[in-house]
Image: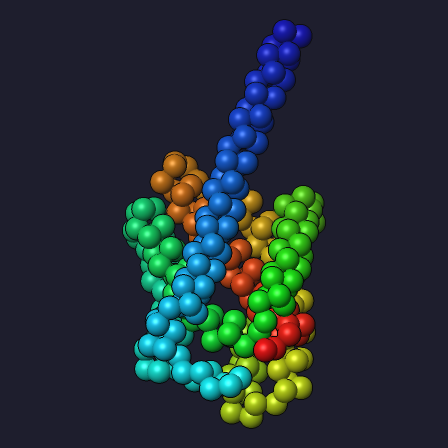
Length: 243
């Protein structure tokens, strides 16, 4: 009887420690993600309000065109994602963190042409809608007992379809196709937010030490960051007020 009580107490203490460590891990994930969003917003704001704007972009009425530097800035985040993945596999957590902040800044620069097209009030409104939607789906992903792998796989396949459709539509510039792509994108990134949250929670068991935990937390933060940004952009294209 005494042994059973000791075992029960031991399991209870162990469960409490694991739960506390899990909360610390998730706190890191969301802190990194929130920090990335702040860096992105600040970078975009600085570019829009300094002479840097004219180094990267040329504005004529409601039209924004890119200089050579602008095109480099636009494409740089994609290259940084691949580099970040390499650093996560082979580099240190401090290097991965540096790459994450650089990526966030480059994203802020690359988003500037899009942000310039919309009013500040509508950007703030869409941001709040995005934050509320993202938060609700992230909570669902964290608390759900249902395995969301099938939803995640479907959303990833649909995302590739959207990417291909978007590239094709660059040559046709069909506004109806853009609207359909934006609507589908909203549902894709809503699903991915829940799936990625559940996956990031499950990834906690892979963190054998603090160095590994930091790298996994950064990797998870990047996934959630991209879910948030893409959901925001899709909603902005659908409901944002153009200048």
